[in-house]
Image 1 (tube, helix red, strand yellow):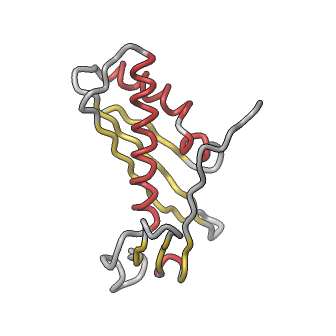
Image 2 (cartoon, one colour):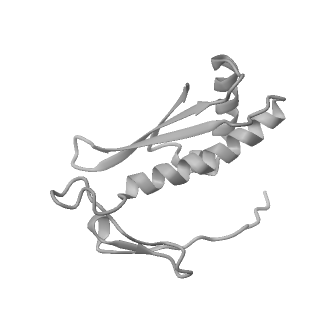
Length: 139
């Protein structure tokens, strides 16, 4: 299989979950909030919030492509991602993800079929297979 890199994104973290994130091009320069530390909860977005936004946007693109292939218009569709940080019984951490989608004029069964197809092609979904729970919910 031949693969072609379309582009590469880069970001740097200083200070971890309570620090900052920057990109070399300056498009992202953010101080992070940390819901696990009193007083830092609302200082800025946390890593899971940023990931939820990125996953929702990526999955939405895959959803639109899948809907088109299945002959269902996805106009005015909405995708919402919920990302939870979970501590496991060995002191490690995992992510749990729920993806919710609404496609106006489409019933739940068809929305679920479209979501399943999108989940097979979305690069974020592919990256998470194996160690992360991804739950797909048709709203």
